[in-house]
Length: 341
Ligand code: ASP
Image 1 (cartoon, rainbow, N blue to C red):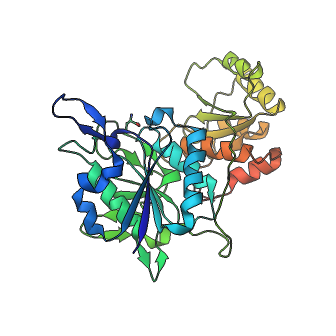
Image 2: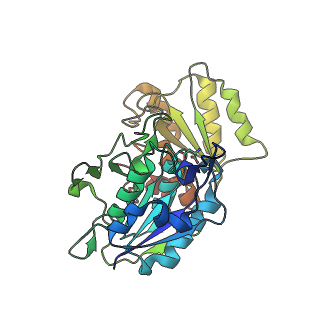
Image 3: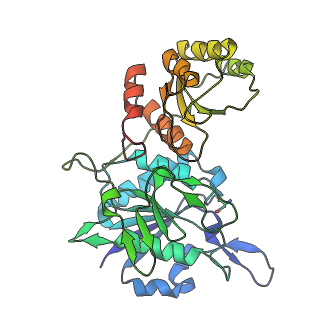
């Protein structure tokens, strides 16, 4: 019988209404089947592991990502697929991080959550959970169909490291602006085979990286931005990567003060990565003069990567201790489908 491991980390999905008190209380995932009898029709064995501490996803970071990846590493050979239940707020960050940590993945790891608690009458949690498990079980000729970290929400499976949370109100909370949907769940599961990820070296084995570095900061530009702000990065706490969210296709002010600050950050050893603040499309440095200056100073193009992936990819690459050129080369490469080459 096929086996799926569910890793429960917290978030709205794990709540139910206590009708006596009227408030939301955590749902005991050890009794999953008792609460969701539909799961017994799936014809598979389900095991639930709960993270050492259940958290709102605002509290999830590097330690939890390493804990989740350790759980998957320990159980990798015993299960056909993995479902991670996670709060939706930072799900795109966590699932992007996992896509870098779980190397040469050849089984499905599906993140999901919900906008309404699983115990709410109008919940979206049941459909999200049941479909995520079905996707984790999906095989063709004994081989898993999904061999990457995916994010399933509201009838769609996305490549996780291409997603971003776009809505706090609608059930359709995620979007993958620069990469096609992997599976569309309607009457049938419509699989977009040509968009699925396959590891680059067929004979390589699954392994887990147990290191990440948090010395990454994010700065979103806005008209009227005061470049003196950058001086704070040259003080006592100096980050190793600055993700700069620029305008449109990678443009920034051309005034001397701004560009001098960028130049001194780079000279001090900080990698600056240019990502767009637009929801879709990417950075094309040199397309406009206002991005050519950045290119000439040595700013790295983030192309069409999401901010979530740029941050977690930087955390992953920093732990590899790469020199400037190797960092830039690795950043431009698609490690697990997070960027268009
Ligand atoms: N605040 C919750 C979280 O991200 C929201 C959710 O689960 O959707 O943990």
